[in-house]
Length: 123
Image 1 (cartoon, one colour):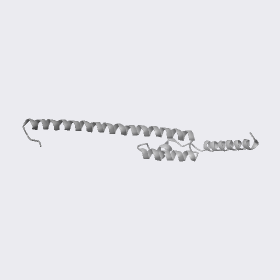
Image 2: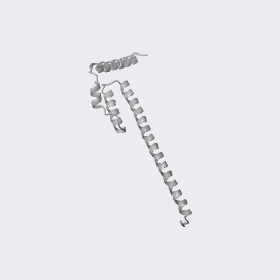
Image 3: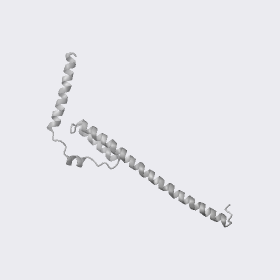
């Protein structure tokens, strides 16, 4: 490794050190601040707003990148669970509707047989 490369690496290490010293010098975000500023995860839009806020906090050095990454991962998991709940509800509603239609069809068949038995011409 030449001296130019060593200087570049040293400068990068110094910049990282300064960044983390600055981060360490700031008071960390408190739970109360986070709960006040970070929206509750209630739908896709609230998760998106929260991720944008966490991204901004990480870029500004208010939280470490690893924390922002963990929040992003948790958000992905929440969205998958939320979508699964929606899918489950949609399927449950569809099965209910199918059962209702099957009952209606069975009743229509009974009425048709009863009408045929009484000699009604259905044409």
